[in-house]
Amino acid sequence: MTTAQTQELDVQPTPLALLLLGREADPRSERGVECPGDLPSPSDPDLVERARAAKEKLGSKVFVLGHHYQRDEVIQFADVTGDSFKLARDAAARPEAEYIVFCGVHFMAESADILTSDDQKVVLPDLAAGCSMADMATAEQVAECWDVLTEAGIAEQVVPVSYMNSSADIKAFTGKHGGTICTSSNAQRALEWAFEQGEKVLFLPDQHLGRNTAVRDMGMTLEDCVLYNPHKPNGGLTAEQLRDAKMILWRGHCSVHGRFSVDSVNDVRARIPGVNVLVHPECKHEVVEAADYVGSTEYIIKALEAAPAGSKWAIGTELNLVRRLANRFTSEGKEVVFLDKTVCFCSTMNRIDLPHLVWTLESLAEGNLVNRIEVDRETEQFAKLALERMLALP
Image 1 (cartoon, rainbow, N blue to C red):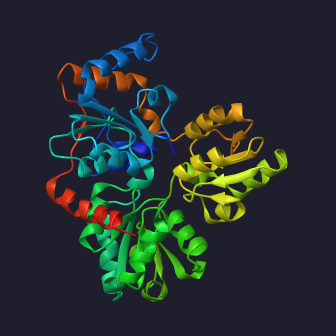
Image 2 (image 1 turned 120 degrees about the horizontal axis):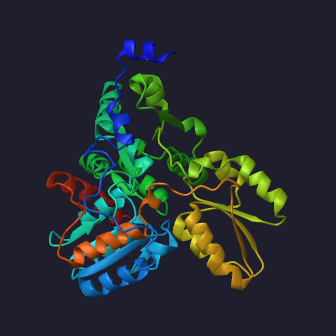
Image 3 (image 1 turned 180 degrees about the vertical axis):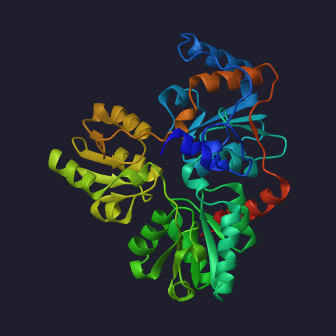
């Protein structure tokens, strides 16, 4: 098509396209686009010292959280490290900290704001640190899905279970409709609870965690699961398919864990005889079936800590963590490699870099509150209800 023909069509970029280009903002999306002020140069040799000085100046007023997938240059300044829910709970356990600097992504900072007191301010060093998985389920799409379930006559039988990796809006929807939140560590317990409350589960936004937990851990079949596609009329499903299903899986996934394939598993086994393949349950079902071990980020860390010297491991999770584990266990004679040959960081998690952290800490030290993440009262109320249901699980 020629340029003239394109101009004649008067093609206008969609709101999503503008958002991805950084030219618009959607407050209901996980994606932010701008940070006010000027960041220090990434080549500044004094960045480490500047971060240290600003953090020392703030003292007990600041508490820095570092997710396992963060870069080493950021992790070195974290007061605690962990997965998203552990970090949110750690923040809530530090009421004396005026500022919670969350080195993670947007939905994690939202959860921290929900669980901390009104006096505490949660800060995300880069507002563009979102989550593609969380973006795959919007409040409008989920409300439409519930209408579809209502029209099929099954909404009253359905209990929503939402993964921690979801926006505050989705957590609030879950709370309003009698559901609970889960992590990759307690997904089975959450599903068992949900099936005690109703006959079916709407699991969102990660289809793979839902499918793997239902089939691998709870003895269901793949036929018990259907995939709801929010971009198709009625989710691409018939009323009969919805009525026959036990698990209604949302069509969402993690862009990092979704890259791993059975070929990746076969290749690493051929290259490294005797290797143990350990993957995250956000991986595809066929990858989980081909692996030796499956577990959450915390499970992966503990498995390697307990592994015997000389053992070999191929890990299917985010590369920053795998590299950190490889370096950590080299002295113990444990070989740790990334499952895939292709390098794949979590691109949004990696937006939290040292320049953004320095800018954040220095701004706070000067009394300037930047990049605050604040969940509105009503959303917080229902999202917290869903989180509290999870905390009450046996």
